[in-house]
Amino acid sequence: MKQLQKFMMFCMVFAGVFMMLTPQQAIAAGTASGTLITNNATINYQVGGVGQTPIQDLTPPSFVVDNKVDLTVAEGDGNYTDVNPNTTDQVLTFTVTNTGNTIQDFDLSAAAGADPHGGVDNFDAVNIRVFAENGTTAGYQTAEDTATYIDELDPDATGTTYVVADIPIGQSSNDIAAYTLTATALAGGSTGTEGAALTKTAGADTPLVVDIVFADAVGDTDGLHQADHSDTDAYQVVSAQLTITKSSTVIWDPFNLAANPKHIPGAYIQYVITISNAVGAGASATLTTITDTLDANTAIDPDLFVAATELPESAAGSGFKVDTTGTARGSAGVAYFTTTSSVDGVDFSGGTVTATMTTVLGAEVVPVYAAGELKAGDSVTLTFNVIIQ
Image (cartoon, rainbow, N blue to C red; front, side):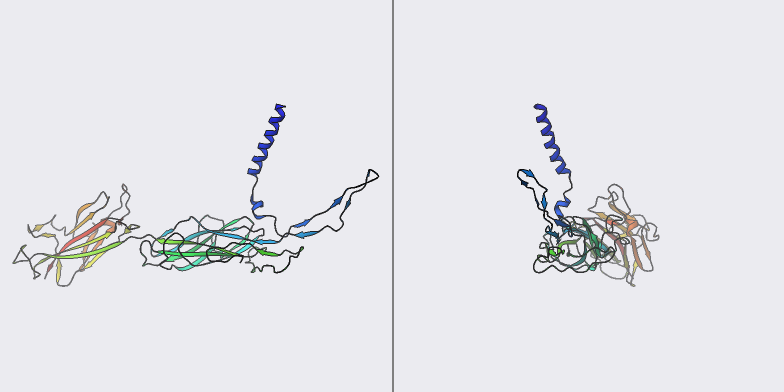
């Protein structure tokens, strides 16, 4: 008896595991459209207590399963897609799932929408396009994912789609552009050709004809039972927040020296150019060059004259000072650069000061800094003197 009980318990456990492991996709989509269902009735009877040949219905009722058109569009990750200003081919990722019971094509379109993540849409991206994933390489690939519709998507299968756009140059951190992807079911059955629009069957059911029933739910911008569905995602700009200021101070003249000097010929004027990336900036900035063309009535001070001592601040010929502050750079602090050579990163030539910031702010490994990088909260100043002629 105990062995029988154990065997029965094993069978029950096995049956439960089998049900859990059995794919549920067939249950989700249901029986494929066009499937013929026939129901035969059989009569078993006796005459005089003797069994007779069963009689079966010679004209059993039959019908074909109709096409339940249903789909679900969902944006990829429930959050913003971070983008930088002046970038191309930025991608919002969506999925389109065929929850109906028929192979269908799906038309794809995108339009500006409302931010689904709690912010406010405040700019438009440009060059909006929509593409379907072709399955060769995961993620959007410009050379591979060129189809503009989903072709022959099986019931319960999911296709990945991409809204692709360019971000204008003038956008600031936290700017938002939202886009709604709408997928519309089309007739399937012809690989490589986008199917025709579907029309739902009106009136009574025709048992031996595949009728069409729209079963889709309401999406972000579409209506109920219209053979389409939609969902919305959004780009959020992550950008540096740079400010640049330039100050001018007269520090010495030939008559007053350092005591209340005036802007007269022979006077030394100190310029300080400050570039800062705000503490709350969403991204680093990579500085390339700082240029400053001197007025024709001034000349560069080659030595960075100090009014109090009337001597060079550093070595003679080092007329430029760069100071990095608020930064984790190992090279943070003051450094001097010559006025006679561009090799060190700062040069004066043809009346123009040029600081090549990718040289001045070199790459660092610990902590990691790219060449010219100014992270959020970092500042850099360039100081030099000119002499009024």
